[in-house]
Length: 134
Image (cartoon, rainbow, N blue to C red; front, side, top):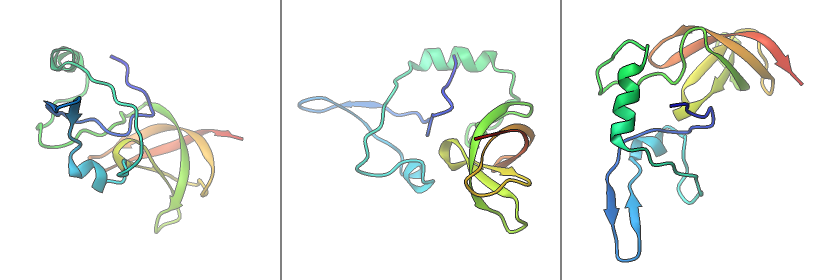
């Protein structure tokens, strides 16, 4: 299953019936990370649990405890990102799904760059610039 780079969050939820429709409850943690805002409209995709479980068994990522969220990037992956901020040491900071941080050494605020992920940690990754986009 291919997941879009525009994915803001991914979580499990039960579908609840109401009088005139159905409700999928978004966990507070997704709002807290800054990925979603109350009152905004989002596109929602529903994937059956069976499809997710069969795909995850094929995944090449090392397994982690289910309570620990997995980073949305892998070492060696390339991504287009926009640098939103600078870190304390002057490195560019970009954010992707769920507010996950990619540190981009040498990049400036506002730059849109293609990076190759060189290091992945649970709460951030490091991406080396391989192409600057206009």
